[in-house]
Image (cartoon, rainbow over all chains, first blue to last red; front, side):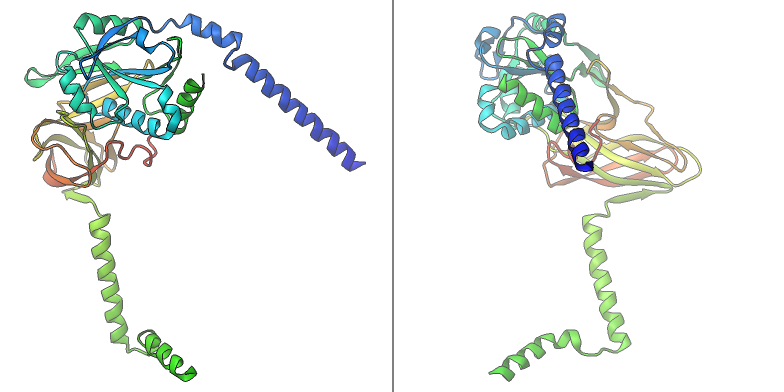
Length: 201
Length: 183
């Protein structure tokens, strides 16, 4: 008797869990109406035309069909940029073969100092798959606007300057649509999970 | 054959089994302790003192090729009954070293500002210069910090005066995954 009722309870719990899980996936999963609505509301991304660290042109058209992670920074950055580049290098390593599908872009918000040549030597310290992008002030301003990224030149002593800037990594799907962000100092496991989800589509 | 192996075993065990005088034991203990402290000092005791201020574990990170700046981190403890203030820093690797404060706001925007007045170390308290917060910004780099190396610096406090410290250099993602300041 006791065993039977325990079994019934167990079945009920299992059924409840399946229902809850299914409901959650339906509401929040990749193809859910809620998520699509959210994505439509956040209009991030758009066309750009920049120059890679090898001096070659790269536009959003070239990225069609591959998901990408893009973030903004500058090479005179003491912490956020080298850390993010290092973390993305580690993530590419951890992704293994899946990393081949993913493009990682580092857009300079300081094109004055970040020439393709300088970025090329700077990026040698990181995963060679990371693409450094720079361009004219106008080109950079335009991509920044498309991604709603913020940056500002801040003068320091002795005529030098530093940059305030958006430190998040934007995740874009194979269609070039915004699909989320990785925050600065995000848990490495969460970071990897988000990138895996992105490459798995 | 059998007794032979027993003899060898006894010979090997002899230094451990034989009875020792008190003085002998004391000597061995002192030697072991000295060895322990000598090892632990070079490995762990990465602290420097100036008056009531203790500077704990100054460290830096390796930087990308050609990078023009590096960051330094450390913890300051004040064992005194009056607040003190870290006001300036010099280092052998940089032409200029400043104290900066970094923050990331709710919109994911990173801001960085020099803190010309320095960092206060509260009486009986501590302050941490760490990633995502206060840090030392090394500029006009003369030598890029390299992983596994260390470099000298001098800190000046309002009250405690100056103290020479040594920054140990971690890798580029150093102290990121194992110090628990992930948020």
